[in-house]
Length: 480
Figure 1 (cartoon, helix red, strand yellow):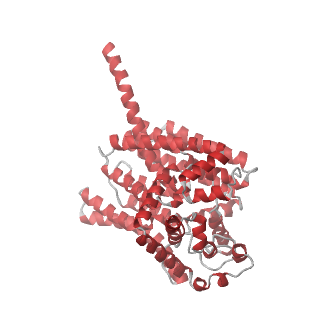
Figure 2: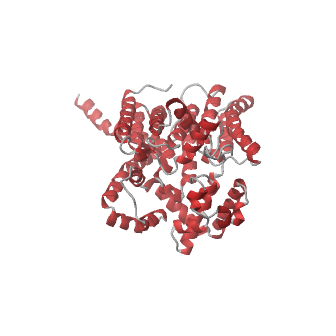
Figure 3: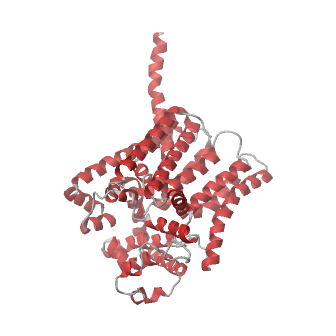
């Protein structure tokens, strides 16, 4: 448990109550509000697990193994469905509870670094961030992933006795669980284990003690992540942890580079690269007929239809890397734009779409998805002015968060608790690097980053408030 803070607790409970009331009031009228475009890719494996006892892409595909989605979030969905029936709104409610848990962890971390005022400010800014608020009322993996990641960071960083074996096991289990929810953390695992060992040695722990604690941190990672890879190898002959990253690399990042070079829209380039095949083979569509109509998949894609999914995934990766090598400058510009969009993409676009309030025409959709920023702004202003205004307003809390975080980072960081700052900033930099691409147009990509930014934003606001009170206190002492 962390330190008590009644102000933070009141903020967390208020935000949670607001989300639950929102679900209760709107879900009966707008059931689609809890379903993002990717939600079925988590729900179908969960239903296969419940109906057939096998982790498959869908009940219809059982017993074929699911190797695209990792099992973390589908297991949560399956658990909710097993207890309460197939009620998506209950999964969204559980996500709201997980987001409340993340807010508490954010407050604990910030309070440990800067006191109660910093903890309360961090919780407030985290709770007000629109993308975090929205994602916590949908059937998506971000709330569970973010909660487990923050739990791992808190266990590693919490004040008190030095890191011991029990805490290392708990931190490793949380990090391994987060990786099973979203495989984006997979490349970070080995460096994290090494960093724990090096950090313990830097803190003058003996070599045997450092090795023991680092091994305790690594053990859950080996069991959870290695266990999933072993399952994949036994079922498919390929131990790749997840194949979704290779597909994203090819159909979003390299496709965006190619589209820019050829002067095409991103959706057009994706279709030329085999978008329909990707949807079908990776389980993002309902089946062959839904994807291809009356035509057969093997007739449309004869060269790749014979490949296994792991082979197709590797082919996607090879093609994407070839594009990046051929166009390094364009690739760098694309990622710079992705970094900007990671914090500038308005949450209201996805929100309005899921609530059924916004259905863009093809020109607006293509400009938006192709990252044509000026054209998108012009079209939204001309054709969807109310949404454009709301989009600008929705980015204001994000801007406040970033300004406060910059202030907290430059004025409060590195004065003490260097190990804590190393953990927080390493996670923030890594998550920023891996999410800065065309897919960051979906504002949910920034959700896992928000807790760490909120910690520094809380430190920045608390420091500013403290300095503002100093002249008042000094004046009172002088007059006395």
